[in-house]
Length: 329
Ligand code: ZN
Image (cartoon, rainbow, N blue to C red; front, top):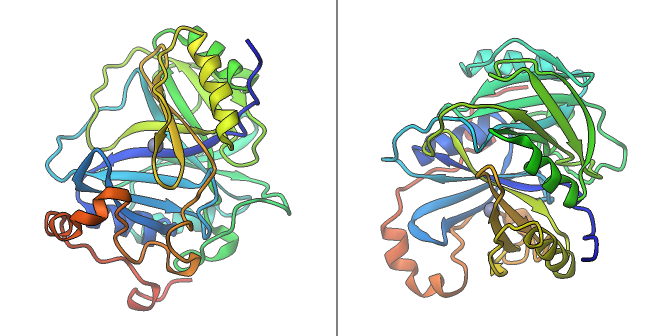
């Protein structure tokens, strides 16, 4: 077996939400991410698929949601991505606590982890999210979207995901196969049920880390839980190599699936977390001009022929706009 090209890090994280308007309002207005793509669940076209990113839809910045209004509340537990963390510039956590007070967001006390400060909070569906203050490099690939949050405080893509695993070892072996290197283990801080957190780092700088915690906690997929995490395999060749490598570990990756803005391979890692490998191209601006991302409902491929029927089956939503919101700086 040839060693695959190491993944640069996380590509996107896909989650389950409830009400689509509430989801849009929170992730666009409160958190200040850009709605880069408004589409449908390609496996269930009666459901939206929202993509929230930086200003350019840079790989490693997109948090995506399937809003299913009637789905029961989920429960975060073993075999899931338990926490999704985003990078914010050093010095901006005071701004975020003030903003969370203003928007009545549920947040916890800051905690220290691996020398960084973490601000844990929950989205309106109860999804656990964290902001981590980091030094943003001069040549950072992310581009802040400043429609609702000033550039100097804006979210700059993923920091990490935390996996809760009944048996961490096979997952840790897999991460190393994928090119992550073990950083170390320390006492877990925050509201995690386990007391040990082992960190793995990819090249980064965006979506650089995966933390693994040994955890036995019942779980149920539903509103407020993560559906899957995708890792960057920038080219088809990188992806094919990685697919072979995970297959040779006894996992069962799908064939490549065309997801229109990227091409994907899916597999469940040994602890049950759904992993995806996603190419960087063609990208979110391959079917809409960059300055119009998210404006219209995009229906990939054959779904365009069914536009009328699909639009009629989707709830109406309004995309938050800074000029119609209360002034905020
Ligand atoms: Zn995905």
